[in-house]
Amino acid sequence: MENLKIKNEDWKEEKINGEIYLMSPSANPKHGNIISNLILILKSYFKNKPCAVFGDNLDVYFTEDEYIIPDISIICDPNKLKDDGYHGAPTLMVEIISPSSFKRDTEQKPELFKKYKVPEFWLIDYNNKFLKQYTLVGDEHSDVKTWILLDKHELKRLSKEDKDNYTTKFKSSAFPDLEIDLKDVFNPIFRV
Image 1: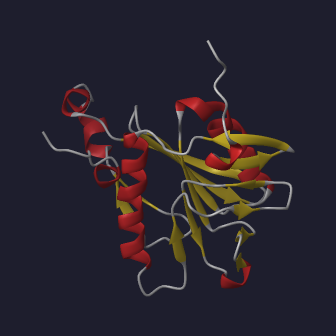
Image 2 (image 1 turned 45 degrees about the horizontal axis):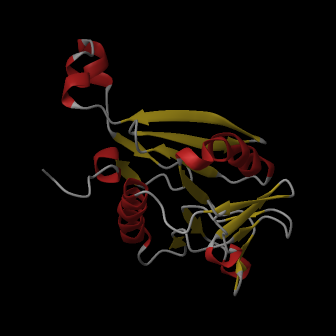
């Protein structure tokens, strides 16, 4: 069997801690659906506001040696937007966890976001339907909250007190009047 040759120009790349990671040209449909859902929500919120929403088509350069292509970026400083990408830390970044890049998404990128003081970022797991919200406090992302979308069977198992406290809605820490419902984030591609 002949070895498969991969042409680097067909792949996107990220560079973290001096190491280059190639990214698949297309994502899992669930991954792409969450990006689409969030972009619709965020574009609606940021309409007529001084920030811009980008999907996975914006290179974010923390430095020339450390750059990534986040699933979603909210940028608010037009002076940092250049022809080749954004040079600096976006105000809000979103990464949807991919099985092929699990360690990079859940370990390396949070460290990178802390290092470059990204005010807020979200990690989303489409298989387990949760969103982890990280807020920068001082030099640490010490305010971490997890939001989970439970199905009707899981909801039945909750105690009365837990049911009363359960919510699918959360607010951004960087944009306090931005409230998002996980039901809209995880809205399926097709309703059956």
